[in-house]
Length: 349
Image (tube, rainbow, N blue to C red; front, side, top):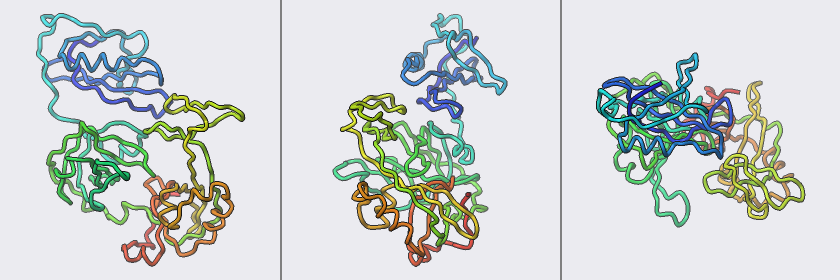
C-alpha cells in the first residue's frame, strides 16, 4: 500500500516482453521520497490513466492498495489494485513536486521500442528547418543527440528549434521514441529545453555514429508490396483475409475498408562485405531518393525493381544503429565527399 500524491504520469508505452501497454505514475510518499508505480493494461481496455492524471492536477492525496512488487523492485498496479481518495489531514506532508528529472542514457534508450523519456546531451544540427510535408505550417529540424554513451537521431519541432544552438549541451524532457526509418527521438508539445552541463563525449568518433557499409555486393533482393493501416500515426502492415472487404489493424485496433488502406512497399536485401553478410530492409523514401524515381511505379512489376537493385555497383549503405534498416544510399564518389571511412565499418550484422 502507498499513501501520497501523484506527481507525474507518463504516456502509454509498449512492454518489450508482450504487446500490453503500460504507463508509470510517480507517487510522493513523504516529503522527499518518491515511488514509481507501473500500471499495466491491454490494448483497447480502459487504463485509468486519466484518473491518475486528474489526481495529479488536483493534488488530491490517494491510497493505492493491493499493489504487487516484482523481484526487480518494480511496483505494479494490476487487476485487483485500487486507487481511492483520502482526507488531506491523514497525510503528514504536503504536495512537493520532484525537481530533478530522471535522464535516460542513449545506450539504455535504444533497448526500448517506444516511450517517453528525458534525455541530456550535445545537439548537432543535420540541416536547416523544413516543413514535414507539402502544405504543412509546422517546422521540424533534424539533429543528432550525443551523450557519453552513444548517439541517436533527434527531430526538434516548432519553437523548440530557436532554443537550441548547434553543438551545445541541453536537457530535454518528454521526448518520444519512435520508428522513422530506424529509431529516433522527437520532441513533443510537453518538451522543455534547458541548458545542461557539458559531458565528456570526446571519446566518441562522430563518423562512427553512422553505420556505413562501403560498396557491398548485393546478394539478393525481394520487394514486398503490402496494405498498411490508414490511421495517421500508425501506418503498420495489415493482413486481410482473401475476399474480405474489412481489415483490422492489430497495432492500433482500428478497422477499415480494404479499399481505403494505404499501399506500401519495402525491399529486403542481403549485402556482403569482406565476408560479412548484412540482412537489411530499405523503404520507399530511401530508394526513391537514390534512384530518383518513384518506386511505387514498380508495385505491379517488382521483378524490374529487384533487377535494378541487384545490378547496382559502387554504392555505400548507411544503416541505422541496429544495422537492419537502410537510412541512406549514396554513390561511392559522393560518400567520399562526405568523408566516410569505408575501412572502418561500424555496423553489426
